[in-house]
Length: 323
Image (cartoon, rainbow, N blue to C red):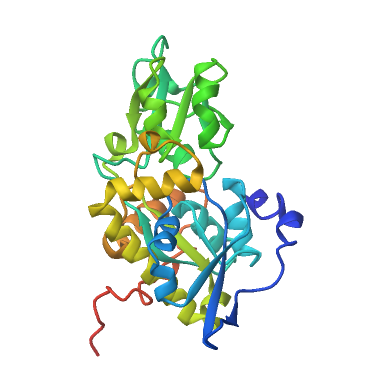
């Protein structure tokens, strides 16, 4: 896992500086937040399109597309200010001494909107999810949901988790599967809908069917130093993505249009993610991952505390603490 902090670090450090405030034409201060051009159904895109960041005096400065495996590295090196990646990646970084903090809940897996879908060819010999043992399975990065959920499911079925994982961006997995270069594609939204509708392919399973969504929390996080220096920016960011997430649930068609425009794909091919209400971080979802990482001996027991990995203090929808 230490590779996550060294691969591509030289490239990421080119993006020097920290988030800054600049004056606009009215003389008021605007907060600039650096963020990667993700290839997912990202609430940041929706928040920007709907003006929720503007309401908070925030301008999102996109730094370009980063491989999924380098987003945690980029936040850790302070090359970007916020990331959207799965909980275990953040937890492992914290266990290694990097002061990252989850500040918004991110995605919530429900039956209608799973976090990821397992796709196979219709002529595949694979019939059940347990058949993926020993097969070539595409994931967008190691150390996150695709790898760990798959391994955990096989272990619970008393099978060896000897999966032949290969890293491919979500957008490339459908074609690789169709061409027979891989046996299984684990695809995230928005690209999962198109893969499922491909006449040569079909869905084998999804994460909701495998663990009822307990592993599905893919949150927004930032660096502890950024929180100390820019609490207003953190509160504004969390507020904007919370409003966008809630809005997207009742305006699915328009939200899908926004994502399609950002990623240059057809609206009909966009599958949505579901987000936690108000972007509130759920302690039980954080605990699920810490327990898993400890049981798998990926982090030492007690090294990362649930309450230390996340905070809802910047969320305007969080219940007020009583003195």
